[in-house]
Amino acid sequence: MVRLDAQLLFNARRLLDGSNVNRLKAMILSYAQAVDLHNSHRPGHETYQRESELSLRRYVLDHMAALERRMATGLRQAKAPIDKSTGLGAKSKGLDARARSATRKKPFQP
Image (cartoon, rainbow, N blue to C red; front, top):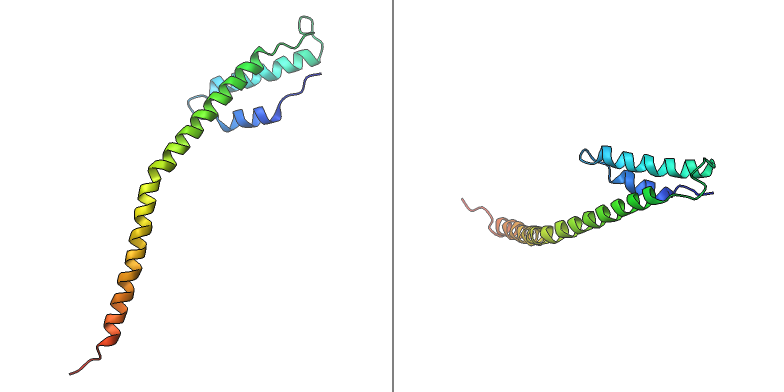
């Protein structure tokens, strides 16, 4: 008996978007059907035919690796603006403190 790989299906579904929905759903269906045909002992499927599973695994691994690369690139690109924002926030706090101390030191003299 062959079991569906729940983690593979979960990862495949996470990759679904408008550009790949038809292709990916067809791959998932083909994989599930191959498992079902084997498990129900259909003629010609006594031996599990894993081509559809391997195809889905390859697609998921390739696209998850690409997604991880895009995330790493995005984080690298965001680092400079984040650092600049942090520096500006610190500078702003310093200016606020100076402004408050400047207005407290000088009492009003008419």
